[in-house]
Image (cartoon, rainbow, N blue to C red; front, side):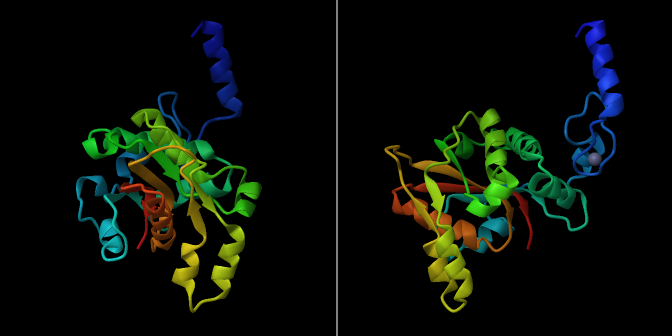
Length: 231
Ligand SMILES: [Zn+2]
């Protein structure tokens, strides 16, 4: 960078200092999105290194998946909650991209993630997409894609918002109704192995419905990858 360029850059940051998206502290020029202290202290799950992790166990006996992992524990009142809040409610999709970049650095060490042919984000409710302007799971998917070099597909899995409100109304048949909320269409692409990507994973009911829809179009190996896991 030229001296003038550097001067303008410093000058700009006097007025718009970049802050850590997890703790709000002002970032140094070497830091991006998160400060080093947050990166050091994030509650990493390391689920990708343990096939029998707590998230994967949630799906046992429910659906047949190849693996399930989430990058971080969702610490209520902590840095992960702050970052997720920035991502979902403060128009900061780049937080999702940054988290995707970070997790992909870990995942790319493992053959099972390199073998995937597509990254498929869980679709957002249409009205949320309209108010938010972006799908936070797609932002995370894009961040994973940049490092793993696996394309993101947003036209394979779709969400039927009308069915969803019906499913919420009828409590008795919630599971069955949830199955009809998602549908998948191969759109002429032949996929065997995919990463199914979500933001915060709680009960896994949404993912379960997505997995069933993807298996219906012949996808054999599904790896679930989330940003945060909360029990
Ligand atoms: Zn921080």
